[in-house]
Image (cartoon, rainbow, N blue to C red; front, side, top):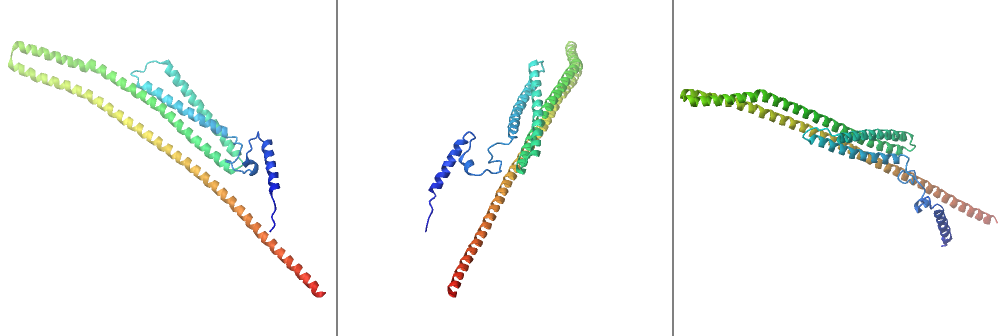
Length: 324
């Protein structure tokens, strides 16, 4: 059986490959890109798409937005935890600056989302369009979550300020009324008690002293009722605060649930993307198998034609020999 030496062909191809690699060294061509044809997949492309810079910018802006929201929460918490709302221009200016930065970043993210949506409409490949839509949807969802969190922080701070003002107003009004009316009555009762006790000692009258004892017990009963009403109001305020705290915890629970739903949607999009990639690869493999089968069938046809030609030649020669 004869064989053919492929050494010269191998040396020629190796020299050509090395020359091509040295010629395009600045372009970063590898052995894979030099010997394997480029495919239309996004993952195997050397040049990133034009919207990749917008995705990186949006991710960086979202990270900065989260940090600024955390700083704003800390500032509001410090203001609420103070014993009194003193005028502090530095904190107010910092809060104002943070609020303006957050609004500016939100507007920038909205513009980036609009540009990415326009890029998705102009995309030629349906796979790239689908991927860009998924990225845009995830970014918009995270933006809406951060905006809702920002609004919740603002509304929570406003509600806390209002409730604190109402409690302060109620406390001072109650103190004024108590100092003017209740405590005045208590002092009068105490003075009358002292006068009656002194008078009872001076007169040393037992019946009258018994009457004074009953009166003193009634007056102390009134004092105890006033003190109980004051304590009851404090208990009611604590119950209201506990109810408000429960509502805030319930709101945080719903926010966590919404974030979980968004994360699940993102995971489903990724699974859908990978399934679509597998489907495309399977379809390409099927096409290659079909081409190979066609090639194999055509090869069998050529083999049959060759056998028929040989048979015809042998029969023709045999016919000539017989005639001679």
